[in-house]
Amino acid sequence: MDFTLIVALVIALALIFDFTNGFHDTANAMATPIATGAMKPKVAVGIAAVLNLVGAFLSTEVAKTVSGGIIKEGEGGIQITPELIFAGLIGAIVWNLITWLRGLPSSSSHALFGGLIGATVIGVGAQAVAFDVVVAKVILPALIAPITVGIVAFIATRIAYAITRRDVGKPDGRGGFRYAQIFSSSLVALSHGTNDAQKTMGVITLTLIAGGYQAVGTGPQFWVIACCALAIAIGTYTGGWRIILTMGRGLTEIKPAQGFAAETSTAATILASSHLGFALSTTQVASGSVIGSGLGRRGSTVRWGMAGQIALGWLLTLPASAIMGAFAAGLALLGPIGIVLDVVIGTIVVYVLFRWSKRDRISHDNMLHDIDDAGHVVKIKKTPRKPSRKDRQKVAL
Image (tube, rainbow, N blue to C red; front, side, top):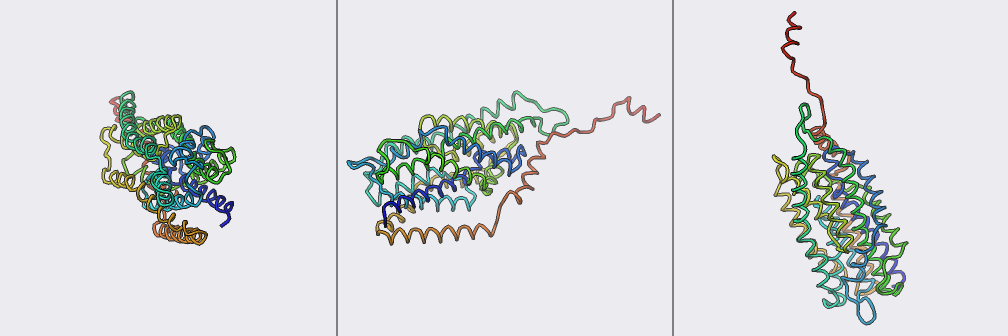
């Protein structure tokens, strides 16, 4: 197969992954404001799409970690080939779609890293993977971030409820936080763009370096940034409603005050990690903050069964996507026929998953009943005033 053609295929597949990353991770920013009724579903994903697009242009530190950190450089430059990157992306996309079908907010970032690592180990060898970088900038942040952000969200929720009080005639008493959620969820969407879009930028840059089209050690070019920003924005706008339902209602019943606390905690953590170049899982951060806020509100119940399923998905993501990437890499090493087989098998798997999703279709239309119910809990309404003695005397007369 022509070398330029395989590079073009890899870039196209990377943008497809970026698209799946967008709809897979929309819930990170918009599940809580949708669940509390702060924003209508289509408005929420529209705002998230625009802010993801903007955020992708704000930083490239994470992209540099992906393109020049995880896979070691050899004497001739980056050791991974475009064919192996192609295989790794197939593993990441398939795992993203499997977890989306299950409604599990797994990490698109870890799916990507797992797919690339599995393909590299099969195609080049384990020595080509910088496991010290993987541990320091991927695994350790994955262990620390959900716990840290959960604690921050717990404290923030406690503070939010401590400085406000329940008012007469207001079922929740903190309905004003619904308006604050518009700002906080938008900040999460912006921070998501600064982190997750860069991972695809890093993959495309890695491909260009491996193909000799770009110098080793350089960052993403502007056209790469623009394409990745657009792809993740379009993916975000499609919704990913299954995962939004899980994040918004599956872990805990969310009220506006705790939603605001969770979102601000998530945004602060993601922006800090983007600045430091940590390829953090925004899904894990968002999930940890939702659980922390649920623990922080008195009377709230965290559904630990669902939390356990999500945690299991986190544990399986790296090895599962690595196995899929390794399988695809084994076929890719057969030459052009192997690449064709990867495309055919990958297409069939994606089609089957898509058809399967039609059996239990979830969209913004059939989510509205649950979302509206959640919104009514916190909607500010006036309750009738009890008649005073003076009023009763007037009635008697």
